[in-house]
Image (cartoon, rainbow, N blue to C red; front, side, top):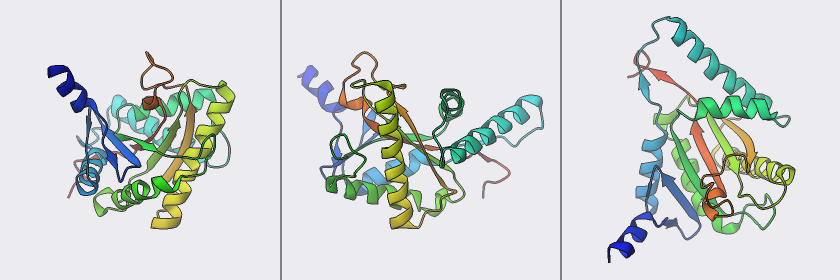
Length: 213
């Protein structure tokens, strides 16, 4: 029983049979509860007001540079070094991992994914996230070549970004897209596992206590 219980706790619950949201080590079923959990996970973390220390200034500059790099990526692919810079900043930011269904070997969004993307759009449109800059990062498993996976992940991340802009009037400035291919496997011990095929949404914005209302 304990083994079955453990597997059940780790099972990923599908939203409308087509959308999976994993926050930390937990998964949530049901449209309303999933949207609530996504919203909570993506809220900017309240940090102490900037003191003007060298560390604060360097951190703020690093975060702003990451956002500028992402915006450059809207017109061209990022270099390996740029992707690493962005990933270093994103590592400490609020985020959720999503499994979004695409057509096989394509960036075409499957009809099965529409309900889930609509839930994501509602969350990103929430007034509590106003002013945020979101990175939509595409990831693949280890099947195929580096270049193929990188290109596919870029196209899929951009497809999600475009869908959200078209359907929810989210601004181009608020949404950025980047592909990582198979560079950042979620489960490196199982490189072909489905968990590695995901879209990660990261809130790249920072909020200080001086901005909190």
